[in-house]
Image (cartoon, rainbow, N blue to C red; front, side):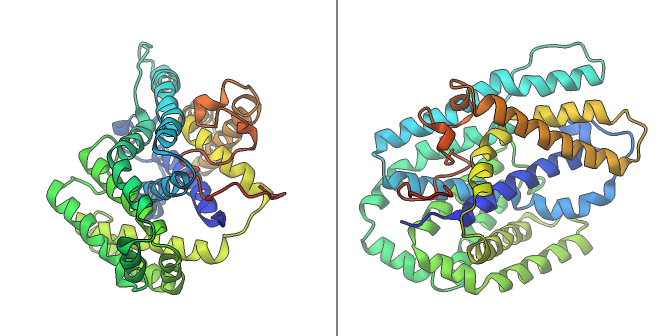
Length: 371
C-alpha cells in the first residue's frame, strides 16, 4: 500500500522539462514550422541537449500514465474508473480544445499581424486525447489482469522482470512499431499514427511493469547505471554519426534505456514524501494544460526587448513558470468550479494530488502530514 513518491517526482520533473523544451523551440530556425513564435536571435546550440531529451520525454509520460491506471483500478469498479477518467481526461481536453489552445493561437496571430480568428485546436493537448483512447481500448484487458492478480500471468511476469533482459525485451515492440510505420522522425509524436501507437505501447507496459510487482523496480535499481551508460552511448552515436537523427529502431532503444535509468535512479533517491512534492504534484497537470499560452505571452513580451538572447531564454522560462503557478494557485485551485475543468477531482480537489498525468500512485489514501 505504499505511495510511489518517486513516480510523482519524475512526472513533475518531466513536465518542467517539457516546458523548457517548448521554450527552446522559440530559439530554433524552424520554430514557425511548428506554429511557435520565433526569436530573431537564435540559439541553435541548446538543441543538442534538447535532442537528447526529446526522444524520451513523451514516451515517459505515457509510461507513467499507464502506471497510474494500475493504481487507480485497485480501488474502483470499471464503471467508476471510466467515469473518473472521463471527468479528468476528456473534460479537460474538451475545455482545452475550445478555450485554452485558441488563446496561444491568438497570441501568435497578433504577434505576426495575422488577422485574428477563433481557432479551436487540440494543440499540445493531443496527449490527453490519446490517453483517453488508451483507457477505452485497454481497460477490458486491464480489468481481466486485475481479476487474475494472483494467477499464472502475474507470476510469470514477475519472474521475467527479475531478469534485466525482461524490461529490455519490450524494446523489440517499439522497434517493430517504427519499422512498420516508418515515421520521418522518431520525435514526431503529436497527432501522428506513430505517436499514437508508440504511446499505446508505453501506456500498456507502464501498467504491466507495476503489475509485475517489486521485481521490476529491483531490476531498475540494480541495473540503473548499465541502462544510463547504454543510453548515453546510443545518444553519442546518434549525435556523432547521425547528427541527432538516427534510424528509428536505434532511437526506440535509446528512448527506453533513458526511461529505465530514470526509473532506477528515481526509485533509489526520490521515493520519499515532502510538502513541496504534494503541491507540485497536484499542480503538474493544470500547469501542463495552460503552459502554452503563458509561454506565448512570455515570448510576445520578452522577445522585442533589447537584451541578450540568453536573458530572453531565461526570462521566458521564468515568466512562464510564474504565470502558470499564479493561475493555478489563485484561480484553478481556489475557484470551486474551475479546478475540475483542469483535471482536479470534483470533490475535495484542494487536497488531491492524483490527476491523470499526476497519475494515481498509491493503492489507498495514506494518512500523512506531508500528503
